[in-house]
Image 1: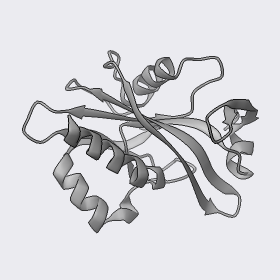
Image 2: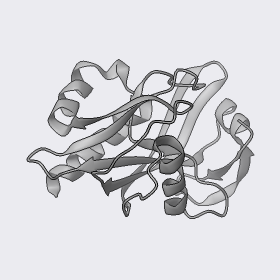
Image 3: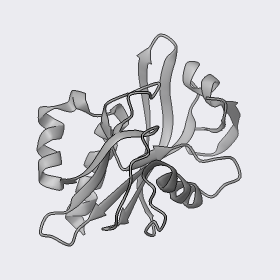
Length: 177
């Protein structure tokens, strides 16, 4: 956990950097992104989701979006997103991504572990293959949007905290498409 994260203000203006450990232990607002790949070739769109690896330092074993991470200093957000799709799910030819929204969220996991992020929500149409990197995810699968919408209400505890904010934004966006 020694990579440098980009610290931002509430308007997503860069104000400095901090180690990943410092940003998550103090907490410090930093830039992040959440990617949602979807396949809308059928009547109901499907979203590619991952169950976080049990070895993750926070939210292990919880379901989340296709991929999420922190952009690197000096690296384009979309280039970083493509790199992370390759690292997490071995998607070597990612689709073009579109930023549909952004939000700030804060969550305290325990005494010295926080998430305080300015999260960019990225979507992309994709129907190709993937291969789970076990260091990142325990599993991945496609989930129909109507099933996900119902499960978010019925079983919120099985989802990562940021996903409970980001997923409804994506589901609403998909309905407008």
